[in-house]
Amino acid sequence: MAVMFADISDSTSLYQNLGDAAARNIVNACLTLITGVLTRYEGRLVKTIGDEVMCVFPGVDLAVLAASDMQTQVAAGRRGNYPVCIHIGLHYGPVLVEDSDVFGDTVNVAAYLRGVATAEQILTTEAVEHCLSESLKACVRPIFHAVLKGSEKESTVYQVMWRTDKADLTDVNLHSKKFIPGDTGALLVMLDEERVRVDQWRPSIVIGRSKDCDLVVNDNFASRRHQVAIL
Image (cartoon, rainbow, N blue to C red; front, top):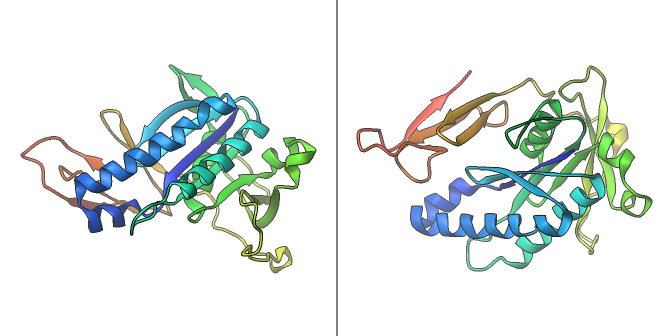
């Protein structure tokens, strides 16, 4: 399967600037926009994890087209002083399916690339690029190298160029031997149906009853916000 993670960029600032209720309305509207794209590309929503969506597709062309459509829809729907952006990680490979959930190294790599991607960026792998149709191969470019989970050798990470206007596209020099840190693994912290991934990109999480926490505890005896650093 092609596994994709689409995450709202810097959603914490939304909550800090707008307050819980207004920010949550914006986040929910964005997530609805993202998931609304899925049916057009044979995608299936696996789950929503906080401000992040995990979904799967039967093939790489459909996944790349869906990711590009998601970015286009979110960019077109921005309004007001707090525009929302998303970043996406995408990988293709074997997966383990249990009770409609999906597990395995393919999932871990997609989540890792989501963590590496910047706002408005779609990152993917050699496995996806290799399987793309010729027409879509022209829409991806190599940008840096990494050693991805489940592999001991260096591979190339690709960017999906979803914008039709390439004027602001930054040039890439692959000869610079730019690497991103290897995927050293992660810890999944779960509360009921909510899951938060803690890794080198997110070394701490906030737990409490406040609606802008990473994990919300619906208990009046719980602290409003409690930051937990996991080393």
